Length: 172
Image (tube, rainbow, N blue to C red; front, side, top):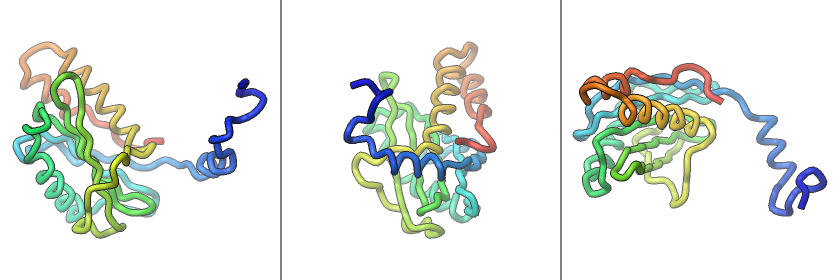
């Protein structure tokens, strides 16, 4: 099939074009690096237009993340994680991305109704980052490689550089 002539049957042109028309930037804001459940965690707020990640919401999301990270050793955690607290257009999301053994990562996604971080629960099986969350995680993958894996010098200096390398502002 030549993609210049027609779309495959499973490609919904109307839905894809509607997504493209509605696509917009979201604001990413670093919340700092900190220790959570024995892990060095880099935290972010990600905000849809008209939504804000409040300090109480960030605290509650980090509490939920701590519960997940406490079991990190069972998943081969290397003790480094990125937490995204996302005030989305259709609800709230929490992503806990942990670097684990063998150049791999572990991802947990929690979802809940907008403005009710106390109701965050594990997302459905197979749920993956949205385009905005993936933009932050792509930056974090590159920062991990740049500073930790390919970095030089003592590990504590590499981790400090990794912690300071953040994305801020509009992500698409």
